[in-house]
Length: 533
Image (cartoon, rainbow, N blue to C red; front, side):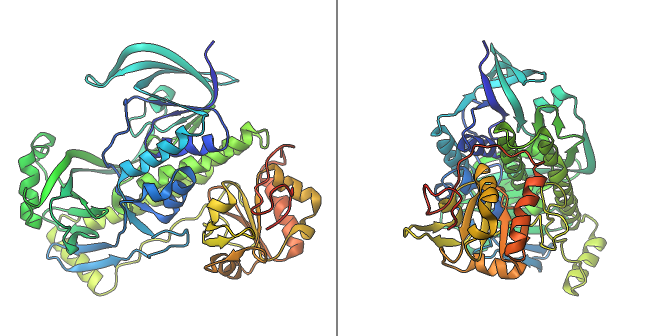
């Protein structure tokens, strides 16, 4: 009989890794199906933000993952090298990490892979490709074929796996999406760029220790540091240039020499390819028990550095909702909020990235001069604000900025343990109150939080070492706030009386179907069900 897993994850890039690790951490049986026999081992993405770093913290050893990373400012210059705008990175954003991070993707993937293999509940099957999909009322059966890496086709042995739900994280050419017959909306943005990844053969020059976008009408190009020893260069293909000629090493050395004065004595090329910038979003993200995530659901140009970050958000949004459903704590309709929350967010970022791409790659010289003049005169509109979630599992109409992100600082527990907030409180819902909320909540509501595995943190019993959580409460004008497992603010309570209503509203948002069993995560108060810290 084909073994039944809780979740099958198809694809083992950052999105699939994150989903598998978070679900494994929550105790679910997971099978991962990946056609390549090993982790990719080369960087496709180079930038993450502090929110993504915090998710990596939940999914793996974040210090190992970011061991060769660096804070990354981003400078836009024109064809003459004049600065148009500088986008600075803050050394420590509200999540406890720099707001813009250049990182080495293999380190991140290795750290998450190592963590999830230690759970004992995640079965990683590399070297297998999905060839068929059949779902019924109880689950999904995936047909697999052994992957022939030399010929890029599944012609090896055949096998089947069955899971209650499937997360498709198998990239922009998703086989699962194809099998489901899901089409994609094309936003009309299509560019070809040559990517050249390199390693420095000498100390990295200071001018390369950040990201630079060259808005040159003759040829748009950019560079970004990958930590301190690696560098990525990208060059837009001009009309008439082909993939074949631009993947030849001499093309890379020619452009590196022309634009940066660099040659084989300075750098070693580790990867060179031509790939397309595109903007496409799947017309539906859920088909029965199958969910599209990451590039399988959406692709965007890289000008915001939010493509991989968006996939990781998909994974963490879906993981906690699947967990509640599988634990019998929420109805199936909760899973519909995955797309209703994530699609508008991704669409806003995609449109913003397209807008930035059009600014960066103005090919008409007169239009570029006008653009530059607008920048110098301070007349260019600022980029749109980062979108919050506007719908879904949120407390509505309470005045707090629900759908935005909650912070992470460093805390000290009563037993003396000190560290990052999430490391000490765990992964899941979190209620943070200025004072012990036990009396205000009462036993019934504490039991509701217990069934969700919600950490209850009272700042009068925990040392808020950098003051970040108290400052956030003051910013909200609140006595307490309730954060979802994906760090999103569900809602805030203005006083002790409102605190009970806040918990009731969470109950209602989850459709009022909370299970009777669950482990409380009460930091520093082991064995005291419902107690607050």
